[in-house]
Amino acid sequence: MENKRRRFYFIPVIIISVILVSGWVVMLLWNAILPSLIHAGTITYAKALGLLILCKILFGSFRPGPPRGFRKGGPHWRSKLMDLSQEEREKFKKEWHNRATDKNQPEE
Image (cartoon, rainbow, N blue to C red; front, side):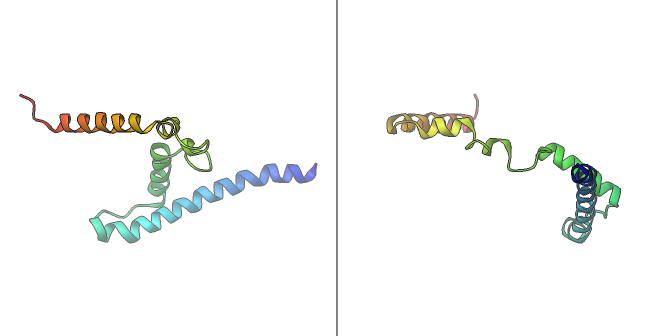
């Protein structure tokens, strides 16, 4: 029982430590690479933490592991495409080719 209680208090400390260290790494990488590469200004530790949170919100989830679509064998459309017959695949390719070329045509 005592071991579970210690683990209960220890896990949040680990999570917070990983977030804080990740912010420090983002700040170091930003300040080492981007000012000389694209003439961006340097950032503070607080801005690095904010950038880390913003990127996590925009580009990823807060769940550990691979992105959602790859957990169960990929997106549902992948299995549908893999089950097409040769004729259906050719029809599908032709349709997408027509859509792509129609968008490239200037409108009159």
